[in-house]
Image (cartoon, rainbow, N blue to C red; front, side):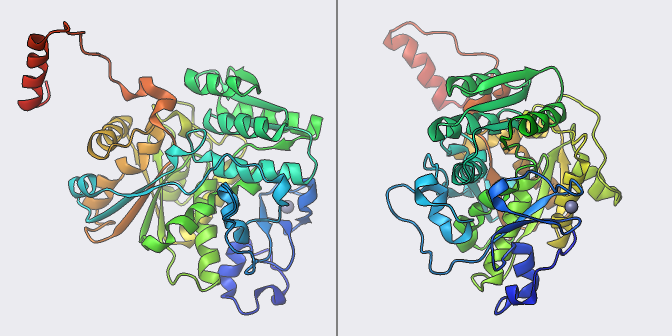
Length: 431
Ligand SMILES: [Zn+2]
């Protein structure tokens, strides 16, 4: 990414390199990460009007803005580190503030002494997307936008449908017809207009851009078309920094989660709040791994040929917005990260291990980072003492069939004799 430099005054008193990466500036605006073109936040554009490049939010640090502890401010608890938004325009369902769970049993099995899961699966709509959508829809209200539209593999669509309902804004959601049915029903129950598309996420993405232009609506697609969401994801870092992770394991489709978290850590280091920025690991399913492929080859990101993967939330070929993948790679390389692809079988194994060892039922895509741990330990990239943190992004109830529990136990008679058979099985181990 290019520096797209601000005036030198913007960085006074701060570690300048981090401050630039963190987007700390004297006044709020967007800047194109490719050509440096500036744009006003009030228009809420998706991409650079001059070159189509990715926009990055720049805004001042607000040290006098203490955490908002009124009622349940959700992501706006971190108002110091977010763009300006009048309290009356903030839309929240109580997102953020999710549990950071130390996982001793699973960590030991995987060869780690210090392993945590940041459980964003327990957000209001069941996925981490709520952080991005809460910020973007609040800004849509702040700037008087009339509606929202997005492309989604399901989770962002459900999130946008819920937050748009709460904001009183119409929402149009474009989703591949192959998305898990429970996610489609979740979108519909909130009253959004759902269009299922016979195509890939990238097809939905192209159509969402057309709809946004036609109606003058905000495009909430949680690729970098939605630069506002990136700073929403950054709020995860403020919640986990005290645990001092060395490494972050992140499930990646397009990558705004990774960019947002590294931007958040850069901000904290620029402000002298932390000493060290953790190394990111981008993990993708083997059947859709355009960013991992580019990382390993050193070439630019190319669109992936569509394949089915159980990790449906990460099934984004990036066709038509390959540059988004390159932008994510730039963040990954800047902070000395790595990228790993994992087979679907390992994803199912990790999903079951999270559920059976730690009580965490997540959807396959959320288990993807955990599936990468054995490989990273075996290769020596992670050692036993590394403080490792994985972000769990979506709840298991979003896609129950993916849990691949084919057989339910046969009903037993309501008798003590029948119960005794079950109890004997418990004592002697799983059937
Ligand atoms: Zn540009």
